[in-house]
Image (cartoon, rainbow, N blue to C red; front, side):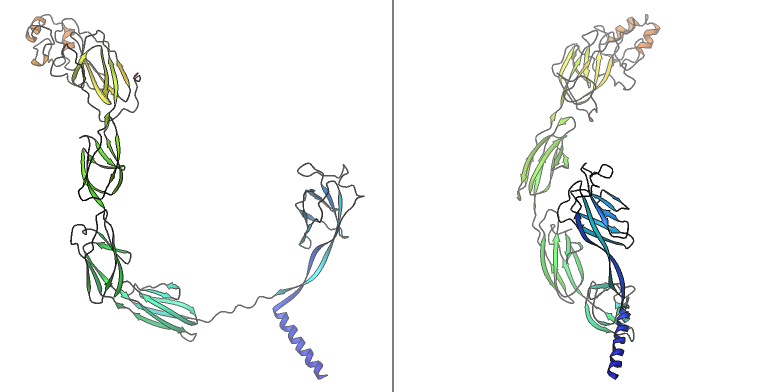
Length: 525
């Protein structure tokens, strides 16, 4: 009897302990007990009850039978009806999912053999009740913790605690940690690092003071020649300044030193620094360039690999390699050459071909003909005039003829353009003797600038003849001191010399400073 009572007490204790950590609940699940073809049922093929899938084929029909008249849903089915439960499925489907929302359960049934279109199947479904154990959540155990306080010198020191870096503020770091053993490292630039260990308990916070020992080694980089002056100096991959310089404070031992300068090969090495000592370093930089002189036309710009160098002639340093040299000038076709610059102390001289002028042509007629034509102040002949090579840019055209007002026009020439001018010259009023645009007063006294504008007679004689008969309209005409021009342009003063009667074989051309954006004249043939 005593043994039985003892056993009952132990069993009760065990049951009580297990109930504290787990709970037994009933779970209802849906199961498919049977699935079969019903050859006598014509629901799937009867006109009133048949359905078609997305491809227009007749669906197979699954009648769900559970004896409880429950309503079901189905994933992937074409259509589902309730009371009776009919599930229309395409014959291409390989499985069907039956769901019962009342018990929050679903089951997927995979067909053993492919379904047949237009056939009816019966599926027997049953709700099964099972016991399930839900474990209780174990209580959260909060680990024992305590503060550690670091006080460090210098204030900018870094504290590494294991694999983490803790924040230092004003030379102090406060961390709440789990009790246990820790390793730490305190370091700062220009000081020797210090490492240590500590054990943290829950009884009281721990204070750890750390004062780092200052490093006092130095490196002095001197410039024994001009190649070193201004070179960038790096110590342990950190830029520290330009040579010449003295840099510290460094810990004793080896340090990486790099000295670099544009167009020179880098000097890289390892130096050893000692306490209370200054290490003098004299690096050697080998030039990686050649002295190059580039020449071209005086007004042409010199470009090397797309970088502007100068105008006409340039001398400087270029790294060894292959370059595209180009001569550019406005109104000219650029010339490009490719040259390899070797690494040589003798230097290299390269001549870039001069840019080639861009030409158009100019056709000038006048009515009447045989008028003197000036282009940019230089005489080119008498109308009609054909100029086959007129340089790109802006040009001023002036036409003079005795007894007619001077004609002035500005043209903008571009590549392969043909410009045609056909001005109707305007006759001067009768009685106006001077037709030169620089005469100060036609009906008064002719100046020496008039030249032979009055024909074969001398200027004074011409004006004396015209003086008594000069009408009022002639005075108004002759008071002009410049030829007629358009409103947009201001006509320049006429050439100092009077237009000659003989044509000139070659025109004098001057390229303009800026190209015209859109040519408005007919292209050259």
